[in-house]
Image 1 (cartoon, protein in one colour):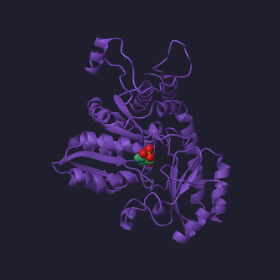
Image 2 (cartoon, helix red, strand yellow):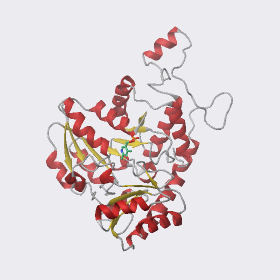
Image 3 (cartoon, helix red, strand yellow):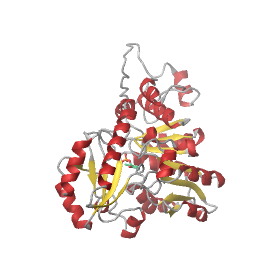
Length: 387
Ligand SMILES: *Cc1c(COP(=O)(O)O)cnc(C)c1O
């Protein structure tokens, strides 16, 4: 455990067969065999820790979980088929009918829909706070409040929430602090250090980093993870062994990839800030970012996402999108390929204009997930599209 982040990401290997393969094998199996009747009984009684059925655990998932736990400084975790499976299963495992959740309003669109449209069916209520008004959180707390939920940096407004402040509020009021750390990746930011109880990731984004597989993971406090595990082994959102194997491999290169994503993103942000057809640019490690100091305190670098507004509103924005040649128009992020999106007409189209404004999205907002192509080519494409 005293080894560095990069070394653990590469050298953590829980499984090796008698063939002594160097690269980890894939355990594409639904179930596992028992030695005899007593072994079977003891395994089902959970008297021994072993694999029984891949809905519960699988060697590839366990290795992926172990790596993320090391990265995040977490005790235990569970791996899911998607980021949303992680969000839903984690919260559903912890919340009871009548409970209340306080959440940042600037959260992933599907998480927003979960709170607004589905949790009320089970009598689970929520209150939102604005990402730049953390001082309003305490006023929202009721005797029923159980969870404080947030993402940072936010999507697509690229706002930054102070994790230390959130950690202190959660501790003072005995709330479970759950942080979706997907935008930062465990390489840039470890929320548990600041008081988070659980950390959620969509592995689909920077963790895989090459736009291949869907995945999710929740790590954190052992007792809470046990509740998440009990719920999930029954309801069945487990990650497939193949995707877990892909993810474990992806994590070996997370540090070098994210370093380059961040270098490219900062260069693009600086280019955009100096461009006369751009109204504003938001990137956590730009000095002009309102939370620059907070970002510096809790993040190693600014991440892969840059948001900006093209001058001329919706019409100019659409013209910009139609002029893009190299970059992809797609909904993913954290991919090796740079991606541009128009949140108002796509990922956040289900929100009202007012809700969009609260999350920092205007009609002309462009979100760029800066990839790993050469920065000169990325800038060249955006420059010609702005022209
Ligand atoms: C993509 C994303 C999710 C959902 O992940 P999926 O793997 O697409 O289900 C959750 N939170 C954030 C911040 C995301 O970007």
